[in-house]
Length: 434
Image (cartoon, rainbow, N blue to C red; front, side, top):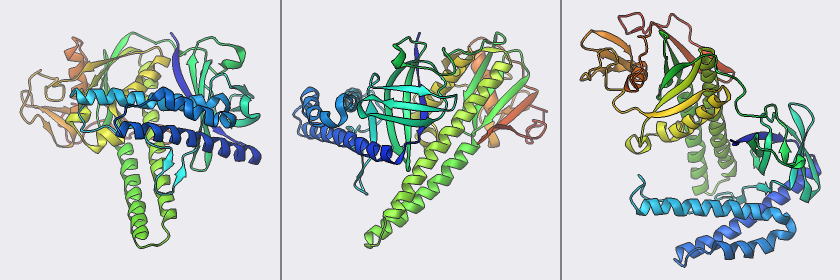
C-alpha cells in the first residue's frame, strides 16, 4: 500500500533564476490572497462561500503568469476552507475543546506588509534529475527553469505536487512522494529506497512506551530487565531559550514602533527566532524518534504499544503539550520511522497508568513524589514514575515486563542521541534501579 513521504531539498538557484522565482512566488501569493479575500468577504457577510465561482475568477486572472499551476494554489486554498468548515461544524456540534476557529489567513506578514513567497507546481509540470545521492536538478517545465538542489531524496515513487518556499533568505523545495507507487518516468522520483520497510525485525519482542515531558519516552521491553529513557529536557531548554528571545525582540519592536522609531529590523529578528525555534525543535524530535527506533530494532522488538493521553490538549492546556511538542505529531512521526524497521505501532489507552503501582498493582495515595519517583507504599520500593507508567501499559494489555534493574538514559542532541554517564541508578532511590 503506497505511503506518502515528503523530501525537503535546499534549492541553489542562479541569480537570474532567483529573480524569476521571486516573481513567480509573489504572483502565487497574490493569487492566494485574492481568492482568500473574496471568500472571507463572502463568509463574514454570511452569503455562503462560493468556492467554484471565486476559483474561476482568480484562475483566469493569473493563468498567463503561473500557467496551470495557479490551480494548485487555488486547490490548496480550497483544502484550507474545507478543513475550516469541518472544524466549524464540529465546534457547533460541541465536539471541539476550543471556543473558536478562524478562517484561512493570508500569505502575508501583517506588520511588514510583505507577501509570504510560496510557489506550488502541479505534479506533472516538473521532474527531478538526480546527479548523485546529495544533489541534482529540478526542472520546472512551464517556466523554463532547471534549478539545482542539495539534499537527499530517500524514497522512490510517484511524485506529488511541489511546493517551493522562500524561508529566511533561502529557497526550499518540499517534494511529496507516494512511496512504491508506479508512474510515468518523468513523474517517478528515484530515491534511495523503493519501499517504506527497509529492514526486517530482528526478533518478536514487544515494547511499551509512556510519552511524557521531562522524559520524552520511557520504554520497557518484554523479557528485558533494562529500561530506556529519552529525555525531553533538551527540547524544553531550546523552547524556553527561543521563547525568551522572541519575547525580547517582540517587546523592543513594539516599543520602538509606538515611539515612531525604526522597528522593522527587530521584527525580522523576531521572525528569525520563530523560525529557528521551529527548526531546532523539529530536529530534536526527529533525533529522539530515530534514535529510539534504532535501539528498539537492535533489541529485537517487532511490536510497540504507546500510551496515548486522550484529550490531553483539553485536559492539560499547557505550553508543553501545545507548543513544545504535540503528542499526536510525535506519535505519528514515531509510527512512520518504526515502519522503516518493520516494527508495528499500536496506540493504546493509558488511563490510570501513572497512578497505579506496577509492583503491587494498587493505587497509592501520593505514590508519585518529587523528581519523577513513584513509591510503592506496600513494599517500600521506589522507581522512576515514567517507567512505572510504561510497565502499567504492558500490564493493562496482559503482558509482563521484568522489574528494570538498569535504566539507560539518553539525551537528544544536534548530533544524535548521547547516553548519560553514570550507573543508571536514581540517586533518590534506595534500590539499585527500582
